[in-house]
Image 1 (cartoon, rainbow, N blue to C red):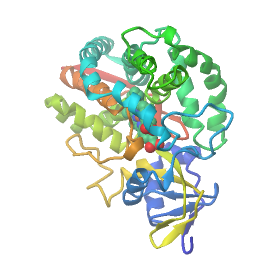
Image 2: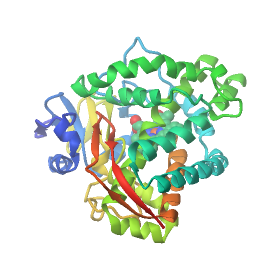
Image 3: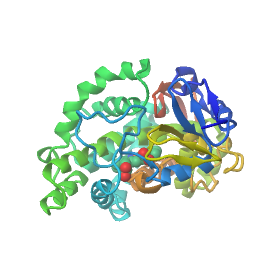
Image 4: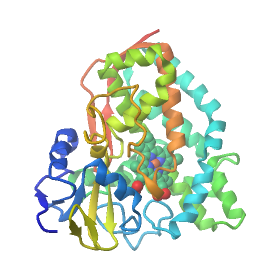
Length: 392
Ligand code: HEM
């Protein structure tokens, strides 16, 4: 593409990942599309480009992988994230039914009881690590319970998804450091996805019912339970963790939420916009794509900076301000178009209930030490966040 800007920036380097937002602003200034010369890929960082590209599944395909490298032909063919229509639609339909608003309504009561228990325990403690004791502990209890998997060994879920999300990026040290533990968890994950391992009245079993009815094969059912465990845990953990950090560092915003707990769902949505758990995904051009007066040739990888689109001043008023009352609808933290997050109802339910319960019962949340980042090639999240809370 002639006249296109080229950037030497490495968006997978530790210093970039530590605080990507100033770098995103610089990347957006390159214009609608630019090249990342280190990886020889194209990239977009503005909302006006990222959102339509996510929706244009014909030109920007997922079937050649949503990571930097193509699909590994030795692995089983995926059934949702990294597949294009028409093959994408069957798995998506089954997952969509399993994760529907109706199902979310049924889960509400149990998720609420667990939120109450968790907040009681945290108020009793007073000081705790908001990552391990809250952002990880709550989703790691309610969601795998709903899927119907056993209680022991759940720490392997995080090791596995950390590795999977790292592998969407380059072969760097961050990926290497997560490989051993991630691969060690793989067989446990697959065991959990088997029919015999699931509780009868669970979401996981609803997938097998689709196999019983002949909609999908037994083998496909196993591989449709797996995305629950890969995509549904670390994302929500980081969504809750990042929103909590934003609340702890914006006491005025927390005060608003405390006085109006019904803002909890909105505050979580704003948290997903302000500090998105999933920062980037790749697409591949299926054909020459005309954009901003130039052409991205066919079969090129394009990195979509979704978290940057969510901070684009051309789309958002004061994008770097965390505002629990903002209408954050339209953010691309859950993606957009046919691959938009199929678990978003469940994620929102978890966010609404845990922040609602905190808002009602906790007067203040303050950091007692610097939080530590956990760097990942695609996810943004924390390793630890020591906090003190005072009861309302
Ligand atoms: C897709 C983010 C929670 C399952 C996606 C995508 C994003 C995303 C950005 C789009 C991927 C793309 O366009 O290539 C998030 C965030 C979450 C979350 C930020 C929590 C705050 C969940 C949960 C589940 C889940 C709880 C499972 C219950 C999936 C699946 C897809 C997906 C299966 C692939 C959908 C498809 O390709 O049709 N998610 N997710 N996610 N998510 Fe989520």
